[in-house]
Length: 280
Image (cartoon, rainbow, N blue to C red; front, side, top):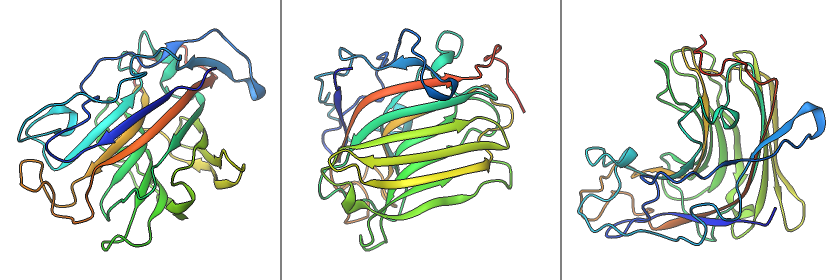
């Protein structure tokens, strides 16, 4: 597949790259393509996806981007690409109960990318529905100390309403290894309470493995949910500040940031025959 490169940015006032409110279908169904271990390619992002070639849309407003385009939520910024919310038509791109998925994608962080001590997720696996869908199950998160030092990559596991969350399961992977470098991500997930999660991140330039994590007994479900979405982009806290303040945010570390994304593929096996049914 021809490489597709999309840039997603989080920009402080007065301009925001405002992709999160658009209804672009970023994923298209692909023809079945068997791969190893019983997986089938269900979805790939085509080279003519809706965001190809688009850099930004500008809005000129004292309140820039509230969470989910809600101008009442001004303590964070969200600029993401997400799998579709229609779990009936697009079930093959979601994680449904007892299914296995393999997610493959690439990203690149620019040199000088500066996280804070607050959250700044670039990838989430998150339940869309159910009573405990507030926090993501998995995030890939750039992080720094409060003074901006120790810039690193984390992977965080959370389970709302249960004691099975494992917290930070990967930490202290130097962010410098990622800066201005394309990296290949391969995740494998079994969506059950006694599930499986692995993440391997390989630097494309020299095939250096930067992250190689797996856990074969990890809670990868949310009680009462029917599916878990995959999300990519910048979702960051303003570290104590708000978008309706001048300047936005209280952390001197905050600045305009960008993230490059490319080459999405979703593989699935053991497909749930009734993906719309919620499961505890």
